[in-house]
Image 1 (tube, rainbow, N blue to C red):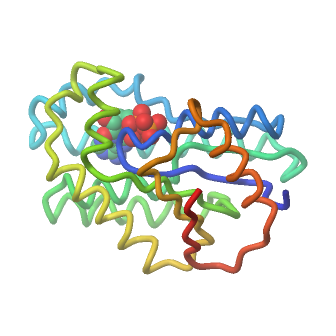
Image 2 (image 1 turned 180 degrees about the vertical axis):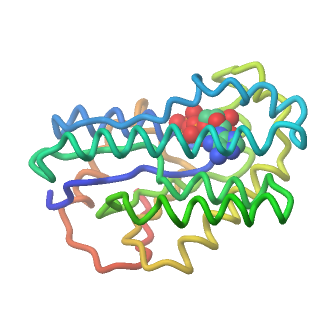
Length: 209
Ligand SMILES: Nc1ncnc2c1ncn2[C@@H]1O[C@H](COP(=O)(O)OP(=O)(O)OP(=O)(O)O)[C@@H](O)[C@H]1O
């Protein structure tokens, strides 16, 4: 496997954390997980989105920057495999959805100062699941503040990711998650591992497991 820094991305409830854990274990790699539970603004945001979106997005950006910078600096780049369950750009994509125009433009200025300081992943694995499946996963894991998430919100997050991936030459493996279950169907994980042995050109590569 030639990729030393892999990021798993996808919509809310797509299964990023599960897969990132499995990959890190398989490759004995270093795991970088989003610490969303530490964000005190998240439950407040879901209750009153307009009031709390800006501090929520600032908090995510600051925390993710700190985490990625520390982890990536402490590595002998790239002696061991690194797996993360978020892209730094995720903050910007959510900010675009959740902030009014002027606030977004300020946020983007900050993002543009910070982003070039970070190392970008060599491969993005994007878990693409249909909205009803995301809702099922969200219900199943039962975080109270997520239970009111609307289909429209999930759809706009999905659209934002798709637009970003199309517009940027990120080397992406787009995995159709409709029938995939990495925990209950071990064959799915084996097939993904096989796919990771290949070398991919920058751009999007669609994977049906
Ligand atoms: N920048 C952001 N703006 C608003 N909400 C965010 C942002 N980043 C994360 N969240 C929220 O934080 C929570 C956790 O996010 P995330 O999608 O990373 O994890 P997850 O849903 O547990 O992922 P998965 O199930 O794929 O492992 C979700 O409710 C998500 O909407």
